[in-house]
Image (tube, rainbow, N blue to C red; front, side, top):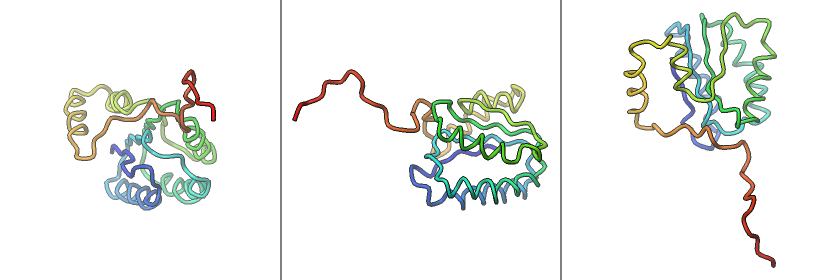
Length: 152
């Protein structure tokens, strides 16, 4: 199962989207997941609590064997969020969790460089909401170093 955040900068659909993802994974008895979080805005504290208290206990009941989290190390805030959620349940996690900065190398690892990988990548790129993964963005706005300022 490959999942990416396509909800834009708003988080109104965060919990419903993650709940739907869990329900689909349970229905399909998914054992491998690639979760691309590079486009996910910074996760607020209340949603972090929900992830830890409600979402993770449900995820731990899935027959997962491998999970890839695609999240650029430049997304420091969400990196800490994900690590915190995983840490809170670390003694109960029975599946392998790997981090990749981008989804494509994570998918290659997850599929063990399957001959189907180019086909899977084309399929993913052809979806209507496909956009380049914003792995170069920071969790906060860039400071315009070296740009002249106007005195007022």
